[in-house]
Length: 390
Image (cartoon, rainbow, N blue to C red; front, side, top):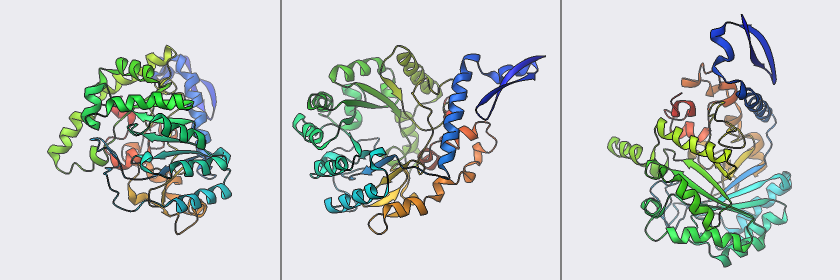
């Protein structure tokens, strides 16, 4: 009879076992990661009863100067509803600063295209006055060096720019003439004084084979961090595809199959092993062999626990990628802190998540059913263990 290590709480305990069960299929070198993953899960568990807001999305607008084929928000040149006014945004920001520890809150300003808001510098400056740190997620085509410097002067130090392949593949989804302006934005941001200049790439079958060249290109252009993600079945990449034929074509064009997922994760792992500032960033548990290998922290979803969002019209949710049916109220009608403390039960009760394919999963206490927005928009394809063919 051999012995094996099992995890009880955050402690590894040696127990007797039959040779066929030795390590339960895990490699010995994976056990330190398993302990770290379990400890992260324990910390997240506390947030279900004591939520702690540290990350805020502000969906600044649903307007965009581009019409990308894979846009999760189906953005157009005009918004379907009016954006918040400057005064409304500042009033909400002020209330959050008054009710929470503002210096612990990082604000990710998304869209649409945030740079279409003429008052962006003013709002960022107000956030900075309160001690909040902020960034924008942008397509980059409007980010001149002068525009970036104004954001730096307002207190912003981080920018994320979408680069979705080399020129042909980038422009296939984002439009002709966008590639050079997007790459220029990375350099403009750095010269203006942004300290974190991140490129983000949506990986799909058409650009999977170009990862090494994309990496060289974005770093040569001025990025100092590169993040790769996959595409979810939402917005134009999913919910807009009403007919079966359109959905099947979307899968072929934008969706990675298990061998392709593993090719992507293998690439990221190899680059991180080499010390490159590259990371994978999608929700859901990847398995002990992948977690803390392709990204510096385990991929647990903190929506509604440490993360909230102010949508473009003042609606409040946990994550802007969640369907609008998950909205918990409006910050124009109810103070944000009241919504956060009294109406986010849906995000903090995990009992409903132990259902379907999660019902008898041995990893449920770590994963808790994956990323909420992935589970909501692609209920048959949200499990990252399944997506790797495990």
